[in-house]
Length: 151
Image 1: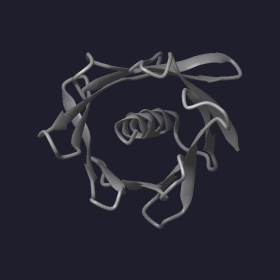
Image 2: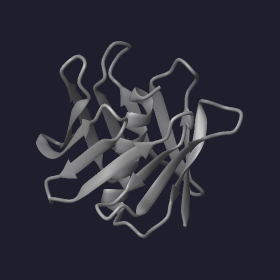
Image 3: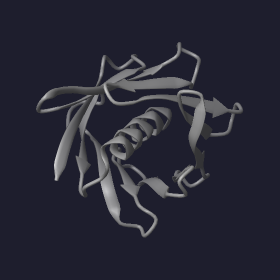
């Protein structure tokens, strides 16, 4: 199992960093105080998240200028992300629990996003299975993005 740590600059910040034992893995930054659009940057990949509509949580995920995925949130707090490759992933939370699980199409857990015990500005991401590096970065970025929207 791989463990990543995420940290928000402070409780009001809209910037997150992700690290492992070797240092910084990537950063997620929202574009301004009122925007729900965000950029994720790492040494391997740069992604852009663009939310459409005002009340909806439909999000387009882009790499460079190409759409590589779409995410749609249901009224039950589940978010389904579909990549252009056809792969689907579900982010799922539970009532009164700040953690979120990322499941594959078969319902098997791939990642778990958790907050620290005494902190809302830091936590960790447990990666339970071997995932290709770029897919892992995409899923980590998407999970942090929706974690922030869910606060």
